[in-house]
Amino acid sequence: MPISHRRTVLAGVATLLAMTGLLHAKAATRASAAVAGAVSGSSVSAIGPQIAVTHGMVQVSVSLRGGRIVGVVAVQLPHDNGESWRLSNQAAAVLRSEVLRAQSADVDAVSGATYTSDAYLRSLQGAIDDAHSPTNYTNGRATLLP
Image 1 (spheres, rainbow, N blue to C red):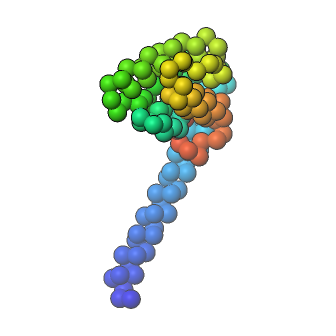
Image 2: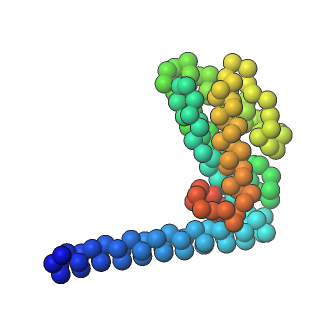
Image 3: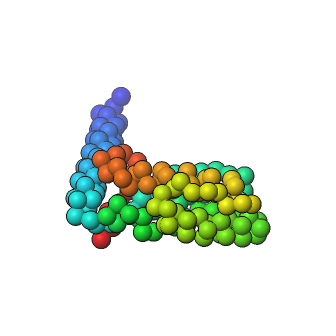
């Protein structure tokens, strides 16, 4: 291999290693900030995983303050047709209200929107788990709010 190609390859490898180091440092900073936030009562927000259902994707985010659920937002809901969109939005409103009341993802599904409800609650539980586990930031989804 000519010298100029070796230098190009070495420069590429060095760039990748530097980027990996920066990403690792960023994750460590987030984790330590979240631990500090949990101790001081700051808010923590996390986005749950995307869950596929027949008519689209469901994804939910959660905000916690002092360990209490203070906000739940449906980031993605099925919307491949008007009826799916309407039912999904109705179910999300009911589920949000129930989750805030129960302070957990352990609530009943909405009748007529069982698959969307199940996906909503699974995504929400993933977000809650991320928010409660500030040392597990390998997925990079949880963030400390001001």
